[in-house]
Image (cartoon, rainbow, N blue to C red; front, side, top):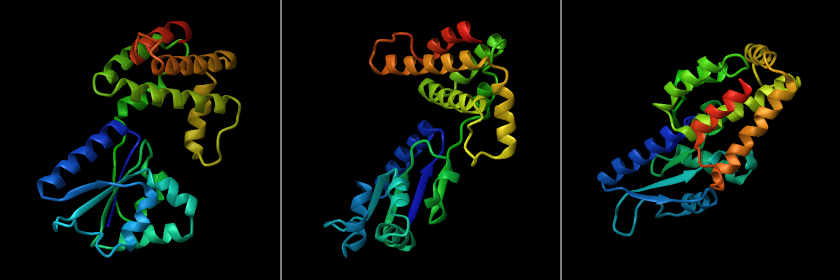
Length: 229
């Protein structure tokens, strides 16, 4: 059996995975974390469903989609497909930051998707010059319920998409309604200023990861809004 835990809200999906582990452990299951490459051994092992002491096993893997996609119709992909159909072997896959539509594995088993709250999408839509007051007020509201790092990652990804939209270089996979919306928001920006804003976000991320930025994600976004929005 295969269970997929996914969604753009990685904080919530990771918390759900932790909760699921506790639930299984309370039922005397043994949790074993494995790499994607180890699932072939799990599949071929005649004792892959029980420990030496007779306890049932739950196998937990992360980001299996990447290895599955790389294999395509190869042996590894076939093994994963067989594992998904096997009721005797239980595998839980956690996909970091991927929506269910981007995880083809979800078609093989049961998927649990964690989507960001609607308010964070509203925040992304409000990020453009001349809208500083509304943006910062919404940021304050969203930060009360969402992790600051998650908010920052979503905004950085959105601004990168706006840069592509401004340059008319959006991927063809983006639906027409979404393309029109992105083009409309991108036109509210001066091209040079939009790129500078994206570069500033990258510097903030680098600074926080190297501990040279002492402001934190939210405060840094507040500061940027003064200069760019």
